[in-house]
Length: 148
Image 1 (spheres, helix red, strand yellow):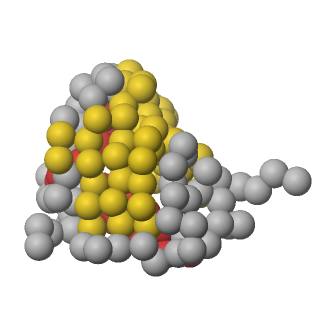
Image 2: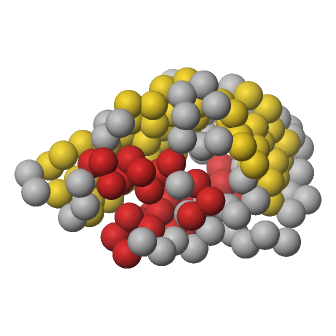
């Protein structure tokens, strides 16, 4: 039996290009502690949140106005037994024009209910994607984790 990857979506009035640009402004919605390029095909960037979570993402797919994919190359989640639960997972942003609106579908492939961090990690994505990123797209201001 296949378990379901964490997925969420929302619709905004902005264009697919504006949504794409906001996604790639990772410091504007996820964390101010991002190190590295977040808007270039093949680039790698590091996320760090206190002593709880760090991960290195590589960008294997970047299709302007349509899709962004991050592959988690290395991660450490310190609040679960298997600290490498994110390793090898993919974080996918699919952008679709729906009439005069744009839909963003977010999927963390591999973040499934059977892994220990699912509750905490899906809750964090709920906030950072559905609130912070959506706000950045709609108003130009997100609510990323602040630098320590």
